[in-house]
Image (tube, rainbow, N blue to C red; front, side):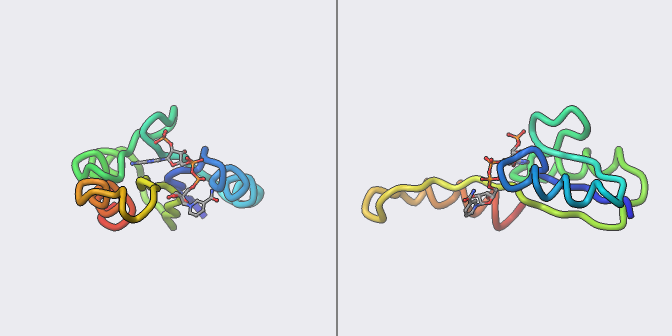
Length: 89
Ligand SMILES: NC(=O)c1ccc[n+]([C@@H]2O[C@H](COP(=O)([O-])OP(=O)(O)OC[C@H]3O[C@@H](n4cnc5c(N)ncnc54)[C@H](OP(=O)(O)O)[C@@H]3O)[C@@H](O)[C@H]2O)c1
């Protein structure tokens, strides 16, 4: 299979990438990836990245940001970081 792994260079992404590389073609995407640059918080970036790739069999996303702090310290804007990245991405 031809698999795109967004966040494949991350802490969780690295072992996942190693696993799938054993018997698949794996392409890694991320904001600073050397292979395909995709920012999941930016829909234009997702479209542009996917347009550069030929047919894919699967996409795995192990990326996303969130602000972590005590509940009372989080602002409305802080929640939008995770919503835009993890949910919308
Ligand atoms: N590690 C944990 O124990 C744990 C626990 C619970 C949940 N999670 C969640 O699991 C996900 C992965 O965690 P991790 O520890 O592996 O994180 P990590 O080590 O920071 O790696 C995140 C990876 O995702 C990419 N990435 C981050 N934001 C991106 C974006 N907007 N668009 C595209 N790629 C993006 C990063 O590459 P670039 O910087 O090049 O974009 C990086 O390769 C995160 O959403 C995290 O919140 C992790």
